Length: 93
Image 1 (cartoon, rainbow, N blue to C red):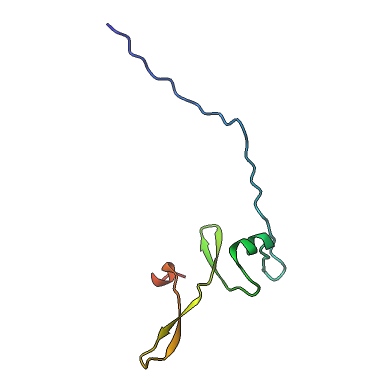
Image 2 (image 1 turned 30 degrees about the vertical axis):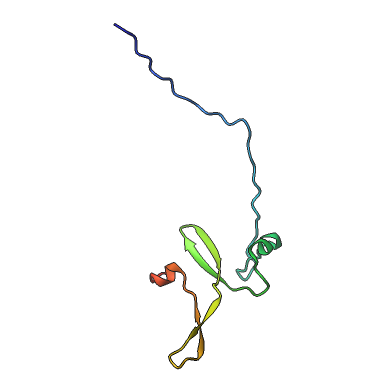
């Protein structure tokens, strides 16, 4: 009878550790946070930018508020209608 080869398990050992620094911030005494300037620039957040705060488990997610887009009302005039997020359209926060 022939011998069957049983494959040995393969182990992968990391050879380098990659450390990625995450920007940190603290709540002030009034519950406000400060977003680091490099992140604000990268995301195009200007002073007084409006953000939506969402909760996902133990995470807080900040999203830019979508710009308002002009629409035509029933009399042919322009009106502004805010863009809705998918979660808002489905009745979420």
